[in-house]
Image (cartoon, rainbow, N blue to C red):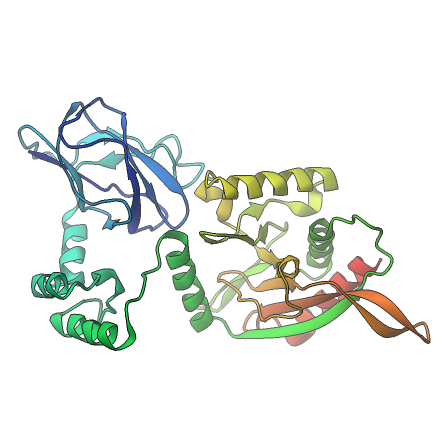
Length: 369
């Protein structure tokens, strides 16, 4: 028998969820034939066969989470002990630069096998099966799951009822935001832009994007990355804007590149393409990397102000709330005017309050122009 194990999917992704098997036990397959599709935190990936052969056994069912180096399936035949043999390429790659050369191997490295053994002890795994506890929902202690943690999880399940573990994008989103909350010294400023003069049909998202490009040009301190370990920052000469896109699967943040140098028509076309790729789950992971600042236009769903979360190494994120018509004093007269609420969260380690306030002022001025 010969095992085919989950290959390294790149981008530091340690696991994937099985979406669908395209083969069954006993099937004859050809090299590069699609065996199954899996979902990582960033993309849906089709995994091809590394060889011709007969499927002897499948490990895992749709919905199961499998880690790098764990068996996916078993081929009938003799064991090939050369675990370093190159056997194929993934259809979806982690970055554009690696798209032509990323390869995967049969077998897992000794380091990855040791890592899995350290995560959960055999006794804990057996206990979890007996108690019908999903080990993916059991908290680790010092990087390891023991029988004690499994027993505690069983007690919680009995007391509180079952919980559904997060999967795919939602699980990665939870990890990312929890990590960001621990790292960033976050401060949020709120303001409103008077947009009464905007004509009907104005592209609100596009106006926000252009305002952020303008503000980044004149106050570059927030269009930056910050390294908290080295207490160092990097100012960016161009704005690569992450635009939050909410889906049923979770939150995606594709990146619009060099927005300050692009026309309105090009930006709108690029934004539509990114959103459609996100909706179809066909967006390359490289298109969600490298944002220097983020925009969250949550107002299209509701809500006035927020405290958006800055995800390192970025320094700032702008949230735009729901447009409201309010009675305000305008040029000495009380008038009903449309107002766009804005919330700017920034990492106070990397930017001063004055710099953030100036940035917000520039955004408001551009929107009101």
